[in-house]
Length: 355
Image 1: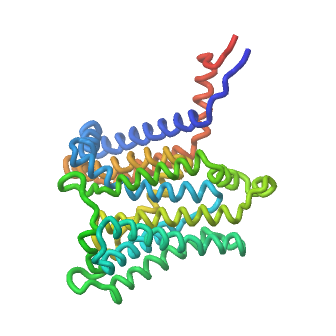
Image 2: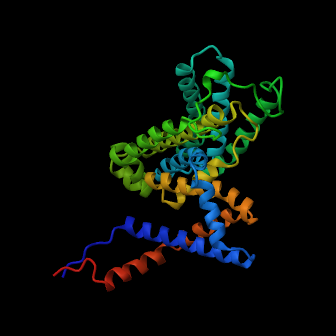
Image 3: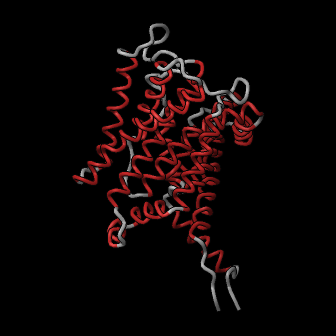
């Protein structure tokens, strides 16, 4: 008798699907406890995020920063180094892009937009390099330093937006508007979906190729699994961890640039509602898998967009979505239990049994 080995990926997909279903069921019970219909509420949620081209566009607009910051987390965490300062890198990248946009105003868009993205990536990548070097050179815990670096970057860019680069007209806590040539085109009327979605798709394909098809991606993963083993295998763990951190920071910087070039057209003191933390959550849920980051970002985009419509149509607080997200994380923590259930079903049904 021969048994086929059940793939760990299949086990995890099963666990994730069960987690999402249970989270939605518990959310339905909460809705019922408040005297509302869960069917009506969920119908409003999904109709509000997918019910028309405009709503779909709005949903995908919300996925852009989630995908980029999620991929940033995936690259760093897979390499055994924890980048918690993605939010700060996003802010620096956003300011760098805005600076290019309101300084070099005579450049055509075909030159200015790539230049703004490069400046944003450099700002985010450089900022991520500092805690990475402190980690590999001096053994300083990167979790502590990156958390501190978040506050430094957010407060520093806030100072820049309020004082030396403050707008001469309009709101406080904002820079001058970028030149029109830098503004990314909107794809659907009245929505915030812009051509940055195409840049994001190219970046996602590149990160997938890097992590899944190259020796560099293999090295990153080996270091993340066992740094000592990687060193004995001839892999320069310290160098690769720094490179992974630079890539991670650059991705967060680009996410910030798209907020400026595609949405606000200037740097704002509170330009992000916590995109990097949401992206980190997305990546952790799918175990830092690139394809998983993309799909979970879309799911989170659906929840975020649809929750507003759900609250408007049914008076159910949009915070319910945060509850559902938290429950998904809670159940993902019990992944091994779900995997055992799948194995038992797999064995009882004789799947994989050979003659």
